[in-house]
Image (tube, rainbow, N blue to C red; front, side, top):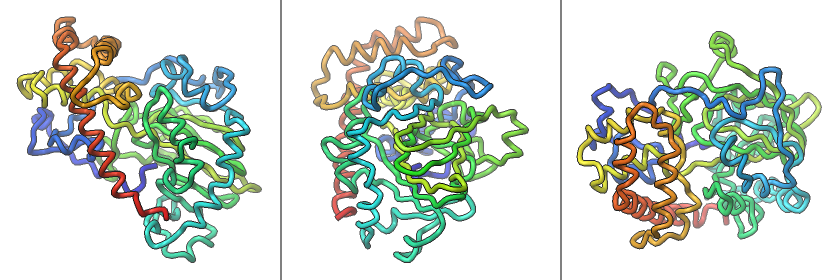
Length: 399
């Protein structure tokens, strides 16, 4: 997920936590790098216990008639989303599946000079350039990134990406496609910096899934390729055993979906007798609550970097890295933020875990309607600018 988009995180000292323009770093550089806001290290915290699958490998599943029904279900959105992984067998309805089932054939037929950089192969558990059209005949697994713009069934008005964007998740996803022959190991054990929905198109695939450990516990929004860095995202079997990671396996078949919050460790492989084609639907939101607080500082609601750092000390890392409500931002005029949206954000702020601070600090920001309104206005301006930049980038990639 997000191949070619990961950035190597750099080590910051405690002093650098005070948000400074000199060491600017953001989980979503297209958005917050514009503000020249620095990265703040993840705070200490733990995995939410609610709704996690049991250690014996069983999960309490709610029955859903379709993927669209799941994406608007209040239990899923409030208790599972951004909290714990879930396996949903046969959740893709027949109409949707018929629309997307042959997308892989259409996408491979569009391989060309403008999009060849999106085609990768897997070598020794890691992605590598495909190496030209002959690579399409390789017996190694193939990854095609950002296919949401390659096919009408994925990116059109009735497409899969639009389904997610129009849901209460409210984020237009990045979709990658993975094609693997039988009896092949995919990417080695790792976690991703965005929530993912794995949707099986054909064949079958076995997924080893483990609860987060280390930096993965904090819902990380970025990763590091440096093995010595706290945000390193790859795991050996020895490390998983040493850290006591709780793992289980799922076999995905046609129409099955596996949901994993960012930080969830996973390692896929195909079965001995079956190939696999699956879509990885990545939910890479524009803003976390940590970003929101930075926006409040940027717009003058917080008067100093010290004040901002104090708010970051109030909240556990998982709360800071939770996504703000994105659906509510859609279509909002940047300079005319409705009162109802401000009130929604006030309620959402109250729902965060403020246990490390007294009520006065929460009330100072919650009751400052102008602070919230100005920050939402800034977020919408950045979203519009990002959408314009993205449109220019992808205009001729998939002809």
